[in-house]
Structures are given as C-alpha cells and as structure tokens.
Length: 319
Image (cartoon, rainbow, N blue to C red):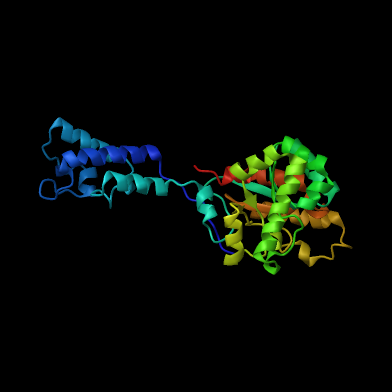
C-alpha cells in the first residue's frame, strides 16, 4: 500500500504580495539586474552591502523581504499570470491532492499532535452501541466507514451517531472484495451504499458528505494498489482513506476469535494501539467486541501521549 502524506499549502496572501512585487519590479528592474545590484541572499541578510536607492526602490526591496521567497526565487522574471498560477497550484486543498492520489491516505499531518480514530463495518449492533456510548462519554468524534446493509439494519443507531457529531462514510453496500469485481460492479456497490445512506441518514446528510467529507474505505483494503480500482473511486469523486495502525493483522489474526476470551485480547489491542498512536496516525478499529471492549483505555492512553483525536476531515484539512 502506498503512502500519502498531507502537505502544507502556500498562503494566498503571500501570493498576492508576490504579484504586487512582480508588478513593481517591472517598473524597477534594478532589483533583479546583476549590472545594477549584484548581491547574494546571504550578503543581503547580513547587511554587508547597502546600495543607494530612492524611497520607492527601498519599498520594493522591503516587500521582497516580507514574502515567501519560494514563490519568486526561481520565477522572478515570470509574468504576473504565471506567478498567480503557481500560487494556486501550490495552494490546492488536500482534498484535491488526494483525489489525484494513486493510493489511499494513510497518514495525516505528522507534524501535528493529532490523529483520527476510525471504525469499520457496523454489523455488530452491540459493539457499535458500546462504542458510541464511550465516545460520547469521552467527547471524542470519529469517522465511521459503515457497510450499507448495516445502515439499513440499525437506522436509529447511525442516526444517533450523526447526531453525536460523528461522520458516517462509504464502505460499500455489501463489503465485497473490489479486486474481484468489474468496474460496473464496483460502481454499483458504491452507489447502492449512497442509496442506503440517503434512506437512513437523509438526502441532506448524503449531500453534505459528498461535498465536505467524501471518504471511502476499501473493504479489506483490497485494491489499494490497483490503478483500475483507484480510477473508479476517483471518477466517483471519493477520497480513499487507508490506515497507519490497525488491530486485525497486528493482533486478532493470532487468535481463534470464536473461542478466545475477550478481555485479554482487548487489553492487548489497547496496548498495541496506544503504543502505535503517533502524530498524524489514522487508526483503524472495527465495531467488534475485541476492538471496543477497552475503547476507553485506548482513548485515555492516546490522550496521555498528548495527542488529540479528530475527524478524518479535520486531520486532512488545510493548515
């Protein structure tokens, strides 16, 4: 699975100043001309060279020193239109970058002490209800990737989840392995989920989700390395979201889950997630007894590390 790292955009205000400076530089080319002012960045910063300038020239030079030099360092002779285009490209939202990504986002901003807890599936009503109770008690908001048929089975549960401030996002209608489906079948799985979400959560919620947090998680994570599947998801205007820490491959697969006692396995899961919670983590849990039994311990452990828990839309948002 590939890695997507959310990057910081360039401030549009700086871009605007850059445009203004470029305009003024057209009138005062001495700033750029080696024949008039031959001065290195380092010399200028250390004030080793002080050319004679009039007030307008000094004003232009001061403006150059106040903007992000990355915007104009290599493009100072460009036209104003080129500078504007460069700034707009650099300042695209993370959402737009992820749309074009060839793989799911598995990390958010790793320079910030925040992460996102996410939950998948939702077929197990008891575990989902318990998770909602703990999350409400601890004041944590999460992003849920709920199977469409689970939405239809427990409509009031997911309506309550939305009311509590959680995000409910697309995890397909029937949780099929997308690598085994045709493009048309993949599209149907995603669209059928939308129908279920519209019926259960309302068309207004569905519209908001599609516009503001159109997140999609691949069932089993299957297809994340498939250009074909990623193209289908992109064409449907969804943002694929993966994970940087999870519980099944790391812990649960080592047990016979039909016979294993919940408490010791849940304790191991809590220790694993807490230990692997880092800046920018996107953590995958499931609505099952093992992942939810020690949810409060997981949350307390994450908080003890100085990390805050936010919605996926928040941790992937622009700086």
